[in-house]
Length: 432
Image 1 (cartoon, one colour):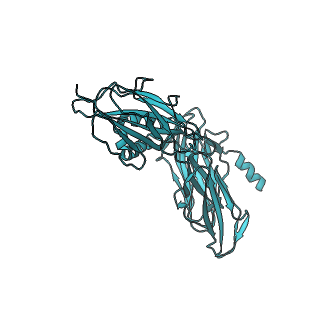
Image 2 (cartoon, helix red, strand yellow):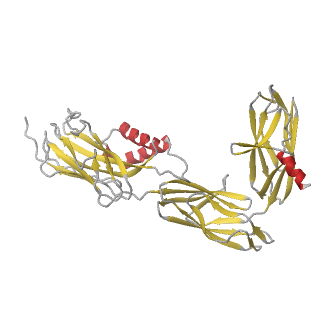
């Protein structure tokens, strides 16, 4: 009799008919035969499956009945009647929920103007173990139920401790107990299958570790329940770049040399943009267009540093020449770095424009003293957003210095959590 049922499952009832009935497994259509077994469902949980009605005939069909008659079963479908054009399909959601352990069944019935299709849907409600998550991880009942491992430095590990408790009055057998997903693994705990006595608990540990920065996702399956695992890995923060200029008094109409270096070796290869800005002393002067980098005639140059190095290359060179201009005021140089987002198995998601805007807002708030004269808001916005669209992750490594010339006033350094600005004062330029 079991062999007959298996064959019935493999042969769709919709053969020779205009309407075909499928259960969706991701994007794959699995024909529904005489029975559709949803398997084990934990007591109190909701299990859902997408059902697809496909019109395989040459003419339109009208769905006049579509029901799932049985305790705990519900259908989310369009109002009846509804049409399905030739070659088209309509998806609906079949859900099941029950709290009392038992075998449940429902009659899935579809009546159309062309033919009728029916199947028996089965679900077995079981009492599952109670899972407790200890800090530093956090859990959510969802749906879907999830466990977040938080942010971890790439190459380091985050261990999360769990308890499984058998809250029933009978011994419980755990036949399904596994973790999937890159970066996640059970480091300590029992091997399935194992038993938990009534009222007892079993401890286990899951480790999250990733070698590359990115967002990671996995799954913890315990009997009839699956928990989504999430974690984020970030690169080792870079030290703030030191932006320095050659020695000597700063005067107008000069060509000065600028260099950049790191106080310690870079933990990863990064690149970015070095910007010049100018704040004139006189209110009648809005800007001095002569203040530019000589290599490009602009106020921006790319820079890069290799992993393990402290030397920062500016426009592929060890330094950059710039003109001081002829107006009295302050020149400021500052930099923003970005590093390529790692790719590989297990990394999911992407940085959206909203996330880029969030980065811009954070930078604008914390780095306003350094950014104000170096990069217009639009330029900062464009750099961050275009960077994230290319899969770059902005790194909080801003640095800058100010040189004041043409005025005896000393400009004081401005403190910031993520930027550093040094100042230098020159003798005043004689009036002309």
